[in-house]
Amino acid sequence: MPRDSRSPKPDAPVYEGAERLQKVLAAAGVGSRRACEDLIFRRRVTVNGRVAQLGDKVDPATAVIHVDGERLQADNRLVYVAMNKPRGVVTTMADEKGRNELAEFIGNRVEQRVYHVGRLDADSEGLLLLTNDGTLTHKLMHPSYQVLKTYLAEVAGPIPRNLGKRLLAGVELEDGPVKVDSFKVVDTLGRTAQVELSLHEGRKHIVRRLLAEVGHPVSRLVRTSIGPIKLGDLRTGRIRRLTNAEVAALFKAVGD
Image (tube, rainbow, N blue to C red; front, side):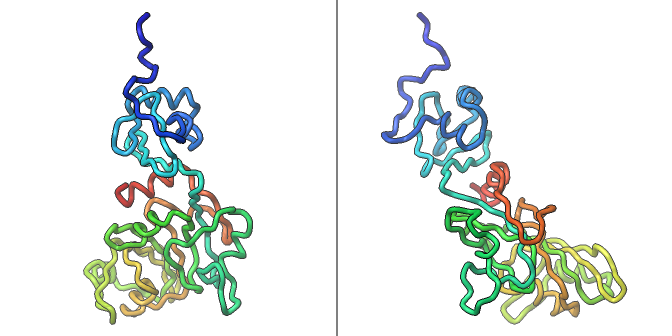
């Protein structure tokens, strides 16, 4: 009897204590086990850089899995959360001065212990990512990976026409030069204006210091995106789990 082309190949690697690849894919939300088997059969799945085969077993905690070229996080112990941080909340899980802290908003909604990816100062608000994935956190924070952060700032106006060119060219601060990757005026409100700027810098208070240096101090600052993750309509003080697609997009942003 001819061998079924969908059956495991004799040389498919087996890892003791691991799980079948299609089961891992299904548990990660890729699709049904049958659909995942079809993805493997069509050579659309790689494990640790090798095209997967039906019958492969993997350890979800260590395997680097890609589906159609996008990284899949199969380790269910890792969590990825977006939060809309309110103004007046410090970016810490336990504040020794007794100020409002992140733990008050996360509570028991996330079972695992998570850490913030970068910071927002107490007077700033908006998108904050929290995770227990230390490797991804490091890459998202390191300037060499050039992950863009976008901010909406309310500043003192009026805004001169050449401000964007000046910020794009670079401004010298006391700890070195900084330049934005994009800048636009969103709205003007009498003596104030709303501007949007993106940059991949991560120095402390960098947006506030930059805009103050060019004569437009910030009265309100909201971070609206980190790489591919958008704040969207997430309400102030609320959190949500990132989707599988969003996590994959974060990996892609840092080259994984």
